[in-house]
Image (cartoon, rainbow, N blue to C red):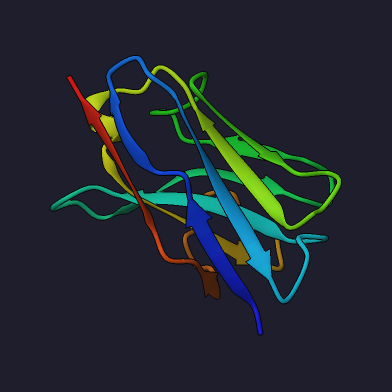
Length: 123
């Protein structure tokens, strides 16, 4: 049974940092695409960043490129991290991680989703 759990959210002031974790149970992240998404209050879901665990290819949305970094735990292969630096108030959202079998960096069509973790950034 594939399960994902996002964690690490919290409250930060603008300019601060947070690291989110996406942990899998029931499978490892070999040969998957893992995506981080977010949904701000009153807005639709958007792709933040994705990683192809096969070759490490990454994708970042324009709004986070240069500030966020997505990585995979190479030892355990069941945790993906999203390091978020230079946080802005507009980064405030519930963040979700998801997994799919094929690489589609801008897609939000993922079969496996974890519960979200809230990130709040104050100005």
